[in-house]
Image (cartoon, rainbow, N blue to C red; front, side, top):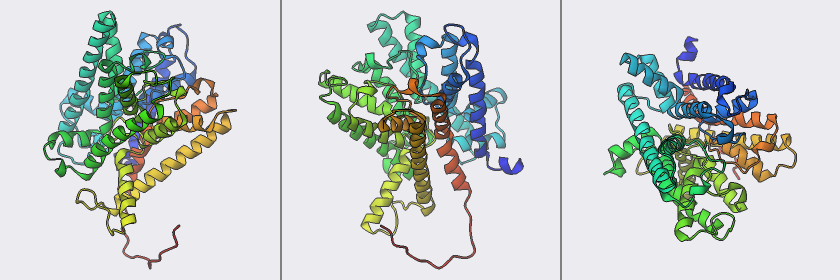
Length: 444
């Protein structure tokens, strides 16, 4: 046990698993459903995992299946999953005792990708303030819009705005509407605050804090921050343009909108499709090239130590710089006049290739479990689950319990896997006192 606790990052998967099981047990209680009935174990497990992993996939019609207490529980599970179970626990400890022991500080660092020991208390307070401030702003904007423009009763507007604000910032896709945000696809006062909140939540706290602190001198940002901030901006911009090009004339998605409506719908869908999971246009009516685009964006995901999933933006663009250096014949990989360590390059390659293998194996397994499931649909659902995005092409209800269990495992692995595995690689460095003779095998 002492050896296990020596690297606290190993506790992250266990803590998330315990939280999922507790959430499953609570969701199975009768008061959690509208019809006051026990929820089947598989449905409760799938929903709890989806909430804790901030995915948003669901096998039920959320607003018509779960009661008020059930929706509140889903909101709490989503907030805990987004903040991080250990980070949330540390915040409680800090609030109650006003101090944080060394062990708890190490646990927080393991989950937030912060490795300095001195500023953990300040880091926690900054994280809490950022999360709740962003969620408050989003909730107020959406609440005001629903109350003033859509004639919602004030308390209903407040509940709807607050629920979606928590879901958006934590990059989860649960919605109080059966069709997601389709009704607000052209309303910038609803869709844009949620999209911007998802972008901020998906950047990651280390990158976000440094970008805010050094906003006047972006050249001084760390390599990880540059890759995350500029990489995310490039993915959203290029993704929105590509989405518009593919769906411009599609009458079932954005083809019937005017130009401003097309732009708003495309931007919000791409911003939310990377990790957020809200459906702004009908996903099952997209063209095939749009599926390819969304699968790629979901697989990349958001920033490290964020509420987003995927292999992470910094991993993807670091590999792009590795390829660029190799094509140019450069001896070193450089980003912004900084040389990237060989160990980081190997870690990025390992995480990316393992993720590709997991998605490929999951897709093959899902096809084998389900009759007549198109390849693109299986790949889309598996990528969405592994990247904790939450978008679906509408086949979840037709899957068997085995298919639901497979996606449940993928959501769990996607939430804790990249963080745990990446940290484990970084901590498992070895030094040898000798080196073997070098040889260059034929490549290609």
